[in-house]
Image (cartoon, rainbow, N blue to C red; front, side, top):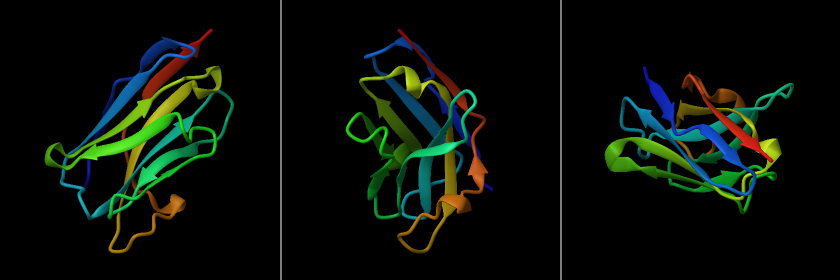
Length: 123
């Protein structure tokens, strides 16, 4: 069982930055895919970015070049640095994990989720 706790959400003006954190209850280094998802108002949940067991990162088209996913393995913490925020980045951001023995991270297989943290971008 993996428990995930997000923090760092808040309100920011467009063009600003926020850094989200996700603390895991176990060591996820080289054992779990870790991801950030988000769900905007009236929208379906979408994957923002993820990192696989060999620390390869992948980004959604809408955030590539603006967001950076990273992890501090010593502290079992996942981060999402969000720069140049846009109004459409508003939503609840969730941290998720899936145990893997390979390097792929199927989007549908994330089975551990945090409670979410609200990000609101205003003009």
